[in-house]
Amino acid sequence: MAPHDLRRPFKRPAISDQQRRRELSLLRQTQHRRDAQLQARCLASSVLTLQSRTSEPVSDVEIELVPEPESLPEQESGDLTKDLDVRQASRLKGAEARKWFAEQLMLPEWMIDVPDRLSHDWYVFARPAGKRCIVVSSNGTTVSRLRNGSILHHFPSALPCGAKTRDVSGSAQSYCILDCIFHESDQTYYVIDMVCWRGYSLYDCTAEFRFFWLNSKLEETGACGPPSHYHKFRFSPVSIYNCDQSGLLASYTGAVPYVKDGLLFYNKHAHYQTGNTPLALVWKDENCSQYVIDTDSKGQVLSQQQVVLELRDDGKLSTSDDPGVIFGCLDGEFIQMSGLHSGDLLKFAISDGGLTLVDGKLEKADLHYLGKVNRARVFADSYSKVMFQHMVRHTPLKFEDLVASISLSDDQENKPRDMEMVG
Image (cartoon, rainbow, N blue to C red; front, side, top):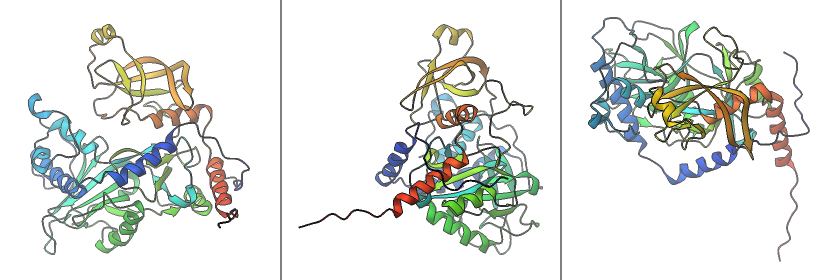
């Protein structure tokens, strides 16, 4: 790889409101502290209760997802929230169960603009290629679920309360919740975040504290050791760096034991916020990922960018953000003729008219309807993903832009400040 120019004379101008939303997220984080302990207990209990209701007893340590019972009657289902208690969450079945678990992961936005104070307030690490999942160990078993909420593995592990062994210790509440990526080639769960440890909730802890606990606690359990009868898969932390010039370069070019799929950036002060958040970011280019531009099922780059949007009651087409960004509206007659319903996820191609932006906000989009998406998918695209894919095709955010932002930030921090006379 060619050496990179570590000093750039300019910083790429912002083209969106991502920085403003980052600041609002940090402010909201301090104003609204939810009961994270209850949420963690609910998640740990529910994943095991649902597993016992939807699977036959197995002697093997690994099972694949089997068809789950149909969802609750309409009058009992309603909207799923993050505040379900154990009893309520345990009653969810089928698609509703999968959706509830899909909502428990923190989903990074795609980096559209380089954050302010990148070298001071952010961590960076190379993202492992693989299946993003949430892993829960409790009551002598371990279960992992994918981003869409479906079960990946059910297995014994060396995590606390993760296997039925004679020397198991801890109360029934001593569960663990890890945010992982399963790397297929070496059958390893790479742990990118720690949500709960031995029943202690880390939802409302900063990323700085969560990463400290992740590195100190995981190694103590033996979960990083080779597989055994009571430990089906190996767990491994990833190398996390301060996002200064050396840390960024190490993440981008350094050797890792897994296939890279871009870089992940975490704000040091951010809590573990489920759903899309601008306080965690993903960035890719062709040097650190095989999957920069979206492709079809055969791995071929599409001639036109495609987006997945959710159909609303009023016919508007929205992203998965909260609040969602509206990309257009379908005619009522077309909706009826096509047999579409509110909540359907629909695929569109961005036609020759492209996306029109005014002051960093979407003004209009030239969309061509392609059809419904696979039923396994749970969420529409986020606005940041659509914009990142658009930028990759036209004006990509380059590694040199990240370096330039760090250089500029360092220069501003080191610049002598004029003293103000008082008196």
